[in-house]
Image (cartoon, rainbow, N blue to C red):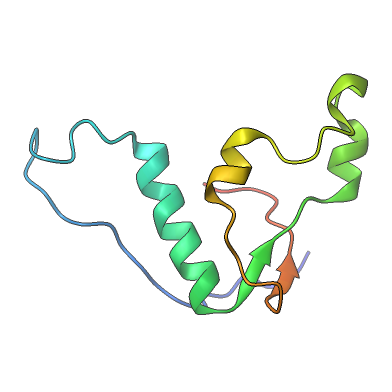
Length: 87
């Protein structure tokens, strides 16, 4: 296991309970923060080939799913990083 370090920080907008952000799914808010942090530290997420090999056969060669295509706009020059788990 490797050491875990905090490399950058980011946050979502703050709103009142039941306010303007109530219709935004929490997963979407979290993904905005993750994407912002990765861009600040010049890393781009990549798939771990071991995980791809574990996927069902029909899904192995499909490439990026629509959600990945929609939100993947990292610079080619960014260093690749595999994200194993987000808590």
